[in-house]
Picture 1: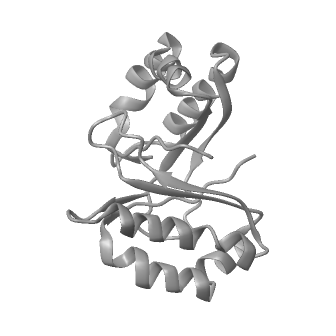
Picture 2: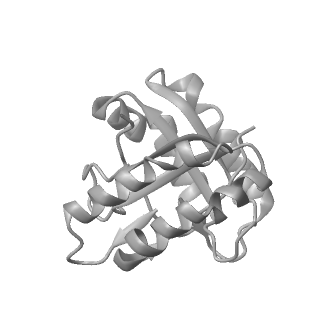
Length: 92
Length: 92
């Protein structure tokens, strides 16, 4: 979950969404994959989230470290991040 | 997504999980519903998350305001919350 820096534009977030949308085609280990902007129903929410379903810890590490994913993070996401929070949890 | 206060016990989180597990039976509008503890794969992660799939904004508001949900929040969750972050986003 991300809070963007002030001044981050809709076009920059569009580019992030377009790039993330390529990842299911790049990473076979990646299961259900959803991401999107906050709908602005509640004040003080975060701005953007990414939710990835992965079968196990190895699949998660493959996703995390995949070079296309890393390039998206470094080139498109990281420059705009004010705050990032994350969790990995098990669906039983 | 929650970060618990120092001193929050496993038993207190067990009670939260047990109570949240009753909500799909209480709230017909609630679709897929997952929650859980951080797996501790990454330092500095948050501690707990709740992910609720809801069909639309009305269903989300019903879930948010349901008295059983509010009682769980007030009695079991809120006393242990150091930090809470949230987002509502659309799955397309």
